[in-house]
Length: 184
Image (tube, rainbow, N blue to C red; front, top):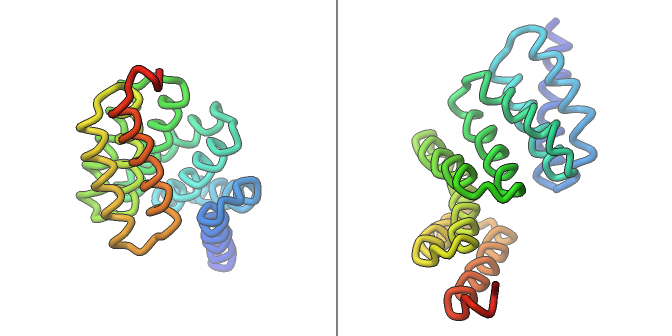
C-alpha cells in the first residue's frame, strides 16, 4: 500500500506540473489514476487535489460535463484548501455559459475562502475572473478594483506571465470603460 500511495502522490504532483505548464491533455492519465486510488482508500484531501486537476484540465479541453463533475467532486470532499479550486472551475463554467451572476458569486466566494486559506495565487486568479465579469457586465469601477488587486498580487508573487495577462485585461477594461457603446 505504501509504495502505491507514493506512486499516486507522484501522479498527482505530475498532473499539477502539467497544469502549471498548460499541458492539459497530459494531466488526464496521471490525475485520473491518483483520483481513482485516493477515492478508493478514502483520502479526501488527495482525492480533492486530483479532482481539481481533472476539473481544470477538462475545462481547458472544452469537456464541460466532465469539468463540472470533477469540480463537484472537489466540493464534495469538503477539504478547505481544495474547496475554492472546485468553486473556481464552477465559476469558469458558468462564465463560459454566460451565467454572469452565478459565476460572479462563485468567484467572490473563492476570494473569501482562498484569502482565509492564505492562498494568494488563487485569490489573484479569482479577482481577475471577477474583474473580467464586472467588465463584461458594465460594472467598470468594480472591474478596475478587482483587476488592480489581481495585478498587484501577481506582481508581488513575481509571476510575470500572469502580470502580463492581467495587465492586458486591465487595458481592455479601460478601453471598454472609455468607449462602452463602441465595444458592444
